[in-house]
Figure (spheres, each protein chain N blue to C red):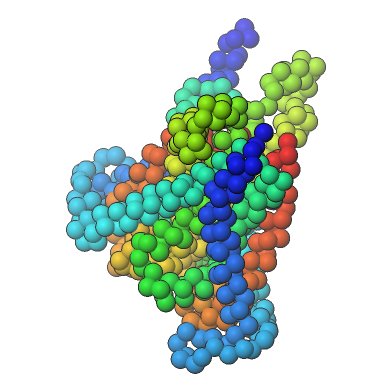
Length: 276
Length: 290
């Protein structure tokens, strides 16, 4: 008796949950569907949901007209580059704080976090001028530098919380066996921390990929990543739904897939360990 | 048991990250402060000139400043209200047993991974457009007049777009917190005859308080800097109806080339963000001790 009630309840919850999930996901689904329509079908009224002539023509046009892959590559270089740079800086720093904590380690961590709280617009003017005067404006190098710096605190924090979970005794044992500090970090700590480092990497690539303040303000045609490339579709001449959808789908697909893999670490990374 | 050797090494390995962040903090911020006291136009060709507090006086008495503060608060408040209430409801729903939890979770989280420029353009054109948008079609279906969202209710529309992006974040964090709740405690309460509402009010909600606070604070930090969504949908308009503080500073510095005025606005933005940051840092710092 009680069991049948709970099955009915489970069915109800299932229907409700799927309905809500469908509603939330619908804009993305609609974008993907529209990207396979002709421009005529894209604005047809009543809208065509599944029964239209599927075409990949939009994808070809987007690539031909606006060199999609150049912007895609800019996004890849900038997000992967800045993430790797941040990791190189953050792994030793997180090691120090996790395994050789000093009196001021906590203050240091909090201070690093506080740099993340500075609104970007507060330093927009000087960054723009510095970039203009050093020739970094509209270059991938410039973006990599800025993105490394804005994400460094998150990377240090995430790594720190992961490293904290590794028992210090193991590292000490390696040290007793005569391992140098370098080999201790490279061959003992890093392999054990691979899951943590991997999720840090993933989350950081996602954040860098979607960053839309500095990428919009510090790039023009040459180094524009996908965020800025898509923004160029907001001009009236770019108002073609199917092509906009094709460009959008290509811009979000890689990161959506990565995001799904990193969803568990997302909470930890974005709350600085405050919610696990 | 850290040796002196290890301490020395730790300091060496810590310094690159610390020095770079220190430079990143001090140099541009110092320059912003310096510029904020200068009369400095990018196009005027005149050398910068010390003007004391003039920039601040202009920026703070500009009617656009008050509008932008009001807009910033409306945007942050609106998005927070939708995402926190919606997030709690969704987390409660998804915490129940049902079929296909994995897939539903994946679908619900998806909007968070969509870059701001894409979500803004998709919503603007494919949903909110008064002629070809899906909402217009739905309105016509019910015999209603299509609504020009971004012209007639620009701020509401932007709140909707931004809330769609952040609802997954709130849901995910609240769901994580909910799942760490001891189920025995809930069962015991149920045995004692506590109804759903009192179980929610007396056990779940107190357990969620911390996660809700974290959601509010972190989102506030990000939402204060909302930029791309405004840039691609309304450009801050109509008039200054959707100009938030971030957009105002951007317009002042890079559209009107007024470096001094923009810098003064930037400093105002930093001060406001810091007020929120202090609370957030306290919360996280407490957790660090535990």
